Length: 373
Image 1 (tube, rainbow, N blue to C red):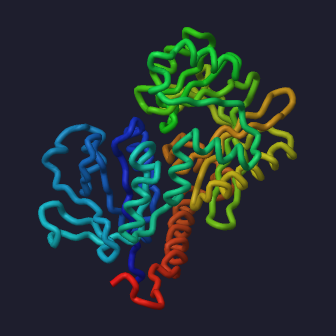
Image 2: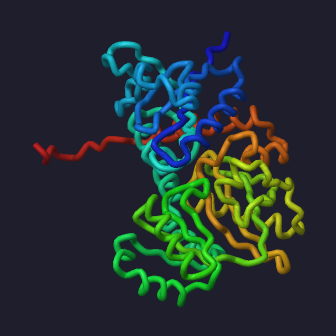
């Protein structure tokens, strides 16, 4: 009998996208092939406590009984590769072969969790530390993509500390650079948390005040009029492939949190009704952006395509896209011929492949003389 792969699924977390993560984890754990994988649920509470039991997902959803659950956590020591009981370092170690991180947003998608997994020497699905940090930080990502000459909407940014006491001066500066409507975003959130579409100066001021609740760095983007929201999924490591593009038709003025997850009224058109050359260019740009920030495993590339001229703008890359029942990343692969269960198999295989490759690299250097003694 073939030994099952012990797959740790990490969900929850200290993030505004905590609830989205729980829904993604539910979908993934239900889809993983029980003949191939032993699923190890790893829940992180809003406060940052790590729990690992068959009840972790249920308890996080119910928000009750969490204080009575025993804690287990990963330690940054490369020879353990296991969850360790908080009651004692030698008590109840639970080995893990691979991790599927589904913590969307801060302290999960931003390179911090990936850094812990690197230190623990555990293979994990998705982007590494650098690509995760760039994927999460909208400002840093845009600076990299602009340097690589991707077609981006115009943008500007500033610090929250610059805004305080200088609101009018900064608003004037923004208005000289961009035209209304504008999108105001915290640099490091996902699922449209803290994002506002501003149509005038009063709304711009309110939007910045909201964004500053979530981050110290604020991004303001030019709104592109009469566009379609197009998404494309990418899969692979050094030789990635792209799915068919799909179109999101949001139920609200833009694809905000409510439209994405709550009201159930947004629609998806898969594949998107685009001219063949436009669809192929979207796929090409998605792969090029994936490589530009050194992604691995998976990412979803989001675009705007103007309705009349089919001009393409790259909006952003998401390195841990949603895996809920309505999420575009798996739905786009389903339409491309890769069903959900097979998609998870491929992602785990890519994680193992990248881990093996990293472990062939030298980590030590023997200097010709012992100069450091």
